[in-house]
Image 1 (cartoon, helix red, strand yellow):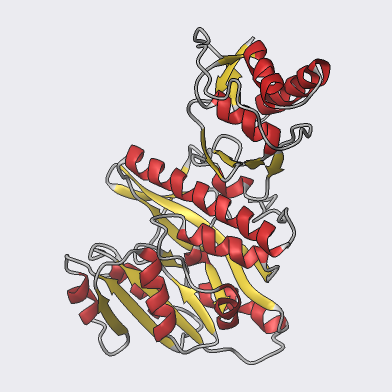
Image 2 (spheres, each protein chain N blue to C red):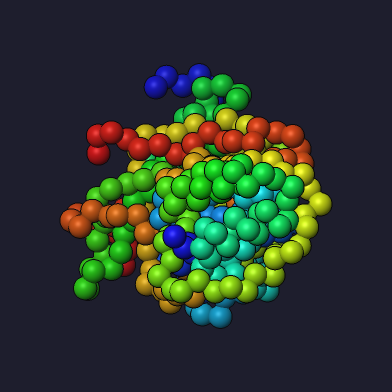
Length: 241
Length: 142
C-alpha cells in the first residue's frame, strides 16, 4: 500500500491492574514496534502487586501514572486524558502486539481523513499444560488491543462508561457504530490475546449482565436519537486462514 | 403445548415496557414491546400453556379470539425458532399476575425486533480449533 501521508503520531496506552506477570511482555512488544509511538503511557489502576516495580525498569521510556482502583473504564479514560497524539492505541497489560501492529493499524488512517478507527484480528493464546499455545483461528473481536482510534472519535462518542463493570469496550464500540463512524478492518493478526482461566460462573454471569446492559442502552440511544435502528454487522471473517 | 423461557443461553430484562434479550447461543439480541413484551413477561413467571397465554391476551386486550390465537402462535413460533423459549417440561402453573389486568394500550400484532449485528462477538464460547500452533513470543525476554 502506498503511503499518501506522513506518519501520524501515536499514543500507546496500557491500562494495568495487578499485571506483574505479563506487563513486561506487553511493554516489550510496544518497544519492539517497527513504527515507533510518540509516547507510551501506563495507567496503573491501583495494583497491589509488583506492577510498579516492573514498569520502573522502563522509567525513561514510559509515562507511568498510579491511581486508586476504579476499573477498566476509568483507567482507559485517564490514559486518554494524559495522552497527546492524534492516534491512540490501547494495549491491555496481558496482551502482546506483533512487531508490525502499529504500522498495520495506522495504514487505514493514511488513506484519507475519514477513517476513525481501525481494527485487526486477535489471536488467543492460552496455557495448555506448561506451555502457552496459540489458537490457530484469529478473529475480529471486541478487542481494543487490536484497535487504533483517532482522537476525534472520543470527541464524538465520549469516553468509556465508568459505571459498567464489564463489556466496557462493547458499549463504547456500540456508540462508535451508532454514530456511523468509519471503521476499517485490517486483514491481519495484530494482537496475541491472553485468555486466562477465571471463575467461570462469576465471570460469565457478570459479563452476560453487562452485555445485556450494553445492548439495552444502545437500543435506547438509537430510539432516542432517531438514528438507524439496525446496525451493520460488526466484524467479518476471512475466508482463507 | 406449554412453553418456558430458554433456561441457559439467554439473559433478559424488562424496563419501561420494553424487553431486551441477549441470546448467547446464536449471538442475536432482541427487543420486544407491546403485546410481545406482555407475553414474555407472563412466560417469565414460569411455564405457561398456549391456552393460558391466549386467555391472558383476551383478558387484557380488546382483541378477537381468532386474531389473538393466530398472533400468539406466530409469536411463539418465532420465539421458538430464535431459541428464546423451549417446550416446557414442567407441569404448567396457573398463577398469573396479569390475569384480569386490562392493558391501556391498544392491540397491535406482536413482533420481535431481531438484531444480528453482534453475532460474531456475543456468542460466548465460540468453537475454537482443537489444534493449537506453537506460540513464539514476539520478543525475547530475560
